[in-house]
Image 1 (cartoon, rainbow, N blue to C red):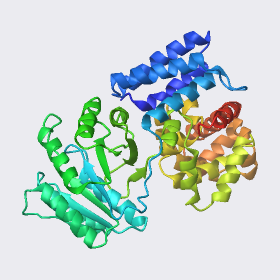
Image 2: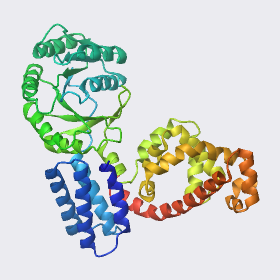
Image 3: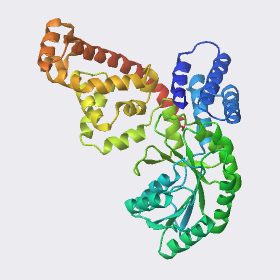
Image 4: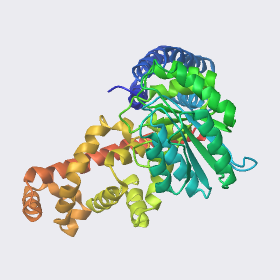
Length: 447
């Protein structure tokens, strides 16, 4: 499915292009428009964003030492970050006592699950959190939210027999405030379809008038597409939206709807839901997210994950050896061992600057890697010390046959690992050449 992830391919294509700069910009902007439109970003949003990119790329001079192509990437990066609206404030510190959050959105967007996730997030920050079920429309909403409240250790308020959501919301906020809640999250109703929100919008306005929330948070399904623009605009007109949560953002959704929603409301994306579990909620960082989209990596996230693991010193040493060009089967083994602890190889590859633009298909490379990593580690374990330190010895057929017998694999498996070693060595050489480009980009203040 085409989507925003195609942006990294656009950057890779730009770096390979030749010709005069104005022609390159025109072709690049046209490709950028196609990608954003295929990701279901609203047409008006695409036009305004690409217009800014074209004007800056042609009219502004890049800083000394920065090529025009590098500058074009930086301009694109800035435009996308600006569209997302920058980082959001997630800590509701005093004078808000309590801080009232009102969740709005259509049915099926994941509001109730999101309410539980946000409650857990603020509970872990040390706040006393309360949840209010003001959804009288969906059967089971009361029981679902109560179960989530019990699970995350939040206070709960609801009136299962009442059909007056405005009264429930008002009573809930007052009661949880009396019980000492620091943060109160009001879960409101949705409707079955995107064409049935008139009554919903009126209800949202009445609830907002009754409880005067400190923040109205719009919950948007990542796969909603072009409908997000008008929907977000209408919600904003009924109850001004202060922030946005994008749900079901698991990497398969196009995600353009979120972009459109931000542009429609002027709000900022605060959280991203990446799965169904209450643990799967991330604070949204537009700079890091856009850098990942463009194939520039997310080093901060990668390091955060690595620091939670054992063997950090060994991993750093192996990485340093590889980047210095001193790569052997020992260093490859260490990398394979640590990558298995980091989770899906696809996510690791996407986080490493430059690799996603060098690989023809990260998905395919990751799939093969997951299937082969155990077998490759077994092959390396069957090598002599001499072979571990000098991989080119595997040019000898007798060594390949002996290693295959020892590991219980086919000759083709050993040759495949050796081919991987040579390809990785070539890729690292390319990556080292590109290191100057990434370093200069980071000096521009983009990362």
